[in-house]
Length: 599
Image (cartoon, rainbow, N blue to C red; front, side, top):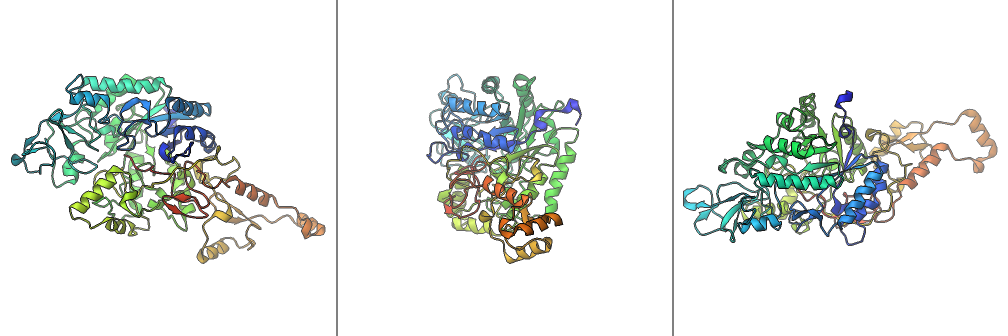
């Protein structure tokens, strides 16, 4: 990389923290900011360069924090502003930067801006308000809301299910919500809206943060006149009509010039829908709108079926083609973001690997791919441990608004009989990978099989520096190794393969064999003849422990976490309840509680 092109975020590894399920400091079952601050040493030991923190703003939690009621306040669920500043300071003291998750497309309906807008006050035009139409004059169905005989302004469908318009009795008009009805969309065509959002961004920059992840940033510009979409397409064409709208690059470039320019920041925009390489290039770099990079969904959309719980056959070459297209397509034009997991995606080992017998090998192989491509890698909490998906027994276990609404609508419409049909469809193995928790048709960033876990109190520090790590992650960041007692049992086939690969290894466990970087066992070098003769002369009882054995015992102690501990933000160890199930003697699930529940 030329010196002129260097930037800290091009050489960084970003670790994503979903605070609700990362670390619980007070034992109330929900992760919090104090718990995150207590884990700063663990993050430093991993060697991460930045933390992306999911929303912790004041919110009624209709969409788990992505419905913001006050951009400058911390929700009581996570702590106080003092707790947030403690996190910031703890990270900065360890040379770890802090990136905040910002939601510019919509607010909560409990935000003061919307309350004033529905009263036709000072912010009357800050949201997308429109009159309804004659239900008899349009081809789409009216809803149960609104006056009799009146239909919403167009046929757009919410990405969370149902119409994208809700009727407000106080204002006697319809307002647009591309997500939940409690998340009204802001009208970015109004200059006062844009300036107000820039002020919120500046507030957090003045607090000393190092960048932003911009939620669904490519939805800010809506088409003029709200034309109805194609009813034969998913969401009646909403996903084609709204993303990358007519003024989107004007808005993003203005945001960059007004707020981000001349600052050393990481800015990554989430771009949903059919965002291709050429679209992405327009958002990033000096020749584009100025963002550092974007999140696209081409690779995580592989194998999605038409319905939320359906999947299709896919091949490894499909995944390879996506990475090839983005690696070559952005070369010289922009910078790539690299990720497999986040709060909206299933665990990559379950999705693209083998979360059973070859979990460790799958995790190391996938990590090698992630950390050797050109771009900035994002590691989701627990990914460094090779965590896998849990399962759910009933719809009642879900807290995600999209999952619940979509499944209930499918049952009401007669598409499925019950949640059992969803489980049967999702659990049917395809292409040698486990349920991928596919998205609602065009919303690939939201998944069904998202772990719901209970937060547990973490140890004060992470694994000691003596822990072995996969070389795929570099010298410090890697898939943690468990002691032999906590490893999943190896079947006869694995034993045969191991014997073939280790012809000189002793057969007794822990003697003559030491673990390699991904958890397999390799033969230790035989001692020199003179050394062996001296040992025999002293007698077997006086034999000194081999250096490899001493190292092996130290590595085992390095990952002996307390009962119920969270490692890397999650993963119950040694019989801890995760996702409602008790699984003894192995890492299970992923962090805790409801981490994969947002957009």
